[in-house]
Image (tube, rainbow, N blue to C red; front, side):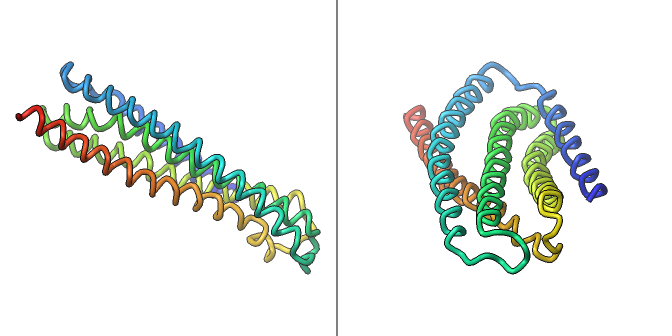
Length: 212
């Protein structure tokens, strides 16, 4: 577990380095910066609206999950029904928060990497590819890093809180992590697709209007 946590720490540190590298690039002329500012404003408004909706669904699902596990018979692995329900609800919230954090940071770096990629393309296509790939790698590494960090930390924590429970039963105690992460990711994917399509249509209309 210690080795795994070290690898996760390395991935997160590398993510920070990639973020700083992308942000160190120039944003280009004022016209590019004006468009980028509008994109950032729209993205922040979208995230605020989406996450407020996701929060209500996540909290409702957490309560329902807790109540459903309370109706189950006591597991045969030495943990009470209430303990199993509490573990599932707590890991559900943990997974949802980490998934939301990964999505937020991914959008945050994306709306800052796009203008830097466009500005880099004015100088060198290779530099533009580097900025685009490293900007995308931030979200990719963060998703994997937070997933492994969450699973490993919860596994260690549950083993510490319930030392009498067999190790083979530990995955059942943290199954809520996957539920929470998947729920947020599902809503983010659906909402993100709608938002992207709206942005595409809006950009197309603006282009046609400006071209007469």
